[in-house]
Length: 305
Image (cartoon, rainbow, N blue to C red):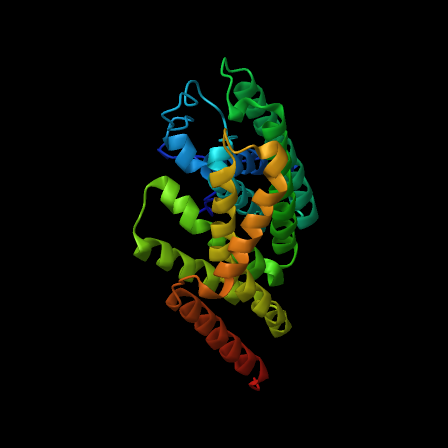
């Protein structure tokens, strides 16, 4: 009689023996893997253009000496916002891919790791910039403190969106919409000027998020208009941010004119809100795909079995 062979048992002739993780170690191993991925995604992926530039600012004024872990410079304000938003949201949706961990535990761990990573990176960058032997605008403590607060604020908002998306997929379109608004700045800093790459990425991300959001319940489609408003506001938001960034430099008397600088940014945002040029087809494709999926899913559930 032939004995039943156990495929999971190691074999001396097996060139690729399987690694068996003890059940007691499975949770800690997954937590460690998730924590490492969160750091990599939040920092190295989110700030990928900065990483590829060698952690240096390309500036003829001499600010580029040395390396800084994140671009904590007033002249990099729009890029700093884009890097932070993309990296934070991408990192905080990772728990959705770790089915071996309780979702609450995975989200809590992710939020804590993102918070610690952001704190360490931001304060390290602040120390590096402030310690430079330069008497310039970028090394002013008030400028650095303002940038630090800005990074913390953007991170906090994106952590909330990413965590909600991990806990309840219905929030995914809102988080994806925020990422989409920052893709033009992210791709521009990466050196990819192709509008086709940016538009296709926008369409795929939005379509996937819309489809995922209504897999459990069609009622989550009520958040789709909010996602559309966020995407619509992306171009004017970037325009307003660039208007502020342009005037945040030496010689602009920022101490006395900060209110006017911020007010000008809001004016640019308001003027561009309806008049800014936008590419429509990625939105149309994404929302059409989401609507088709919603109808097909709804009909399949109503169909008698």
